[in-house]
Image (cartoon, rainbow, N blue to C red; front, side):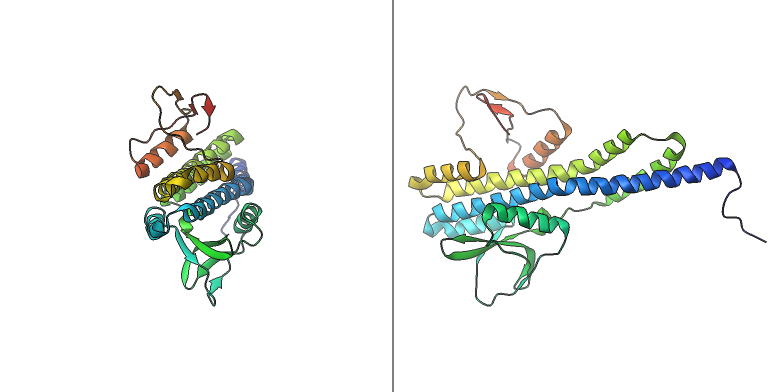
Length: 279
């Protein structure tokens, strides 16, 4: 008895061909989307790393010598960021040779200098390591890998299975490209919000710690350094200040919610303050 794998019905043949076409199209769109998001994601990660290094370096330079240990402990406990001096004979492993890591390294070196080094492990401690200099001394900053690597949650696998099922259904109804673009946007929303919120929380915590531990006579220098290097400006709250609420968009709402979880429910947000736009 022969087993016929290819259906004789024209309807099912058409369905299988359309299903295969939609699945291939979905895979192609996913590949295009991954390639399209590579540079924006690398730019966001590199800006986060450069901010961490510049804020840490400025905090160390302007902090009171007797409070530097407190500063380093604060960074480790709040942000998981650890700072070590460079030591002779230290064992370092190069970072993974992936397009994202290569692009991030290139963008970071443009801002911090060509002598910036990177490692995925130092003396047996894994993480994302990058170096910086204070005068003639070299230091290593260890950033948790979660800041760099996207965590794929189990529910996204469910969304992937749902996308496949919808692809098969689309073989009959010919779902439009716009619908798929909407799915990709929804898929990207939470990881993007998580990365932005981590960046904002890091900036606030590092700035706060730097202000607390800095010498009073050098605080103005610290604020100028933050403004010139990072474009970050710090102002005290003033009576009668005019603030405009941020845009009511899903990404902004999710970022605000994530930031409040870490900084406290009394954290406020604005898109403009006394006529100055920004976040």
